[in-house]
Image 1 (tube, rainbow, N blue to C red):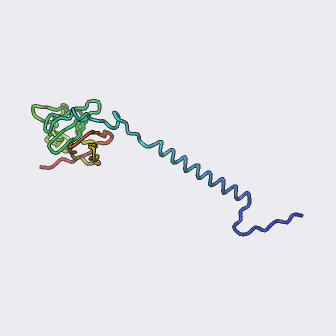
Image 2 (image 1 turned 90 degrees about the vertical axis):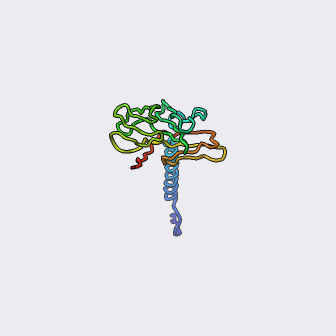
Image 3 (image 1 turned 120 degrees about the vertical axis):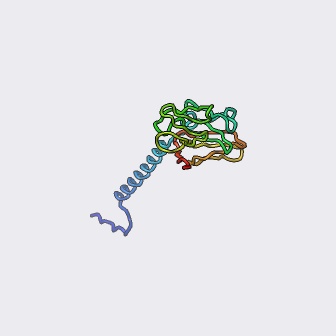
Length: 177
């Protein structure tokens, strides 16, 4: 009756073509779903929650008393070498540090730990380490200077905006003198 046509090598039957088309479209859909999921799971940086913009008029003059940002629990320090953002919590047990202007240093009311204006360890119980720093960015008309996960000061020269990232505390070992 009907003669089967001989297929050439590499030809696909209709059924094989449908399997390949279904497999390809499934793979394409899966890759798209993974891309959308990865995009949706990326962290969203939010001002007032993760990032905190500091009013330039409130930044203290160099070597003056630090500015306390209460709702984010960090201090803004302006030294001659630049600006820093320090954590308000004591590295020993997490108590809220107080600035003592008479002694010109930070003191822990819980156990008496003491730190300099730059966050350097002076004395007290627990691990010998400086106060934790936060990442910062200083924006100017020409560039954006950042701390890049290093506990270093930033220059305020030509600054138009200062932003502190409070998501991660940066550890700085104390100088052993």
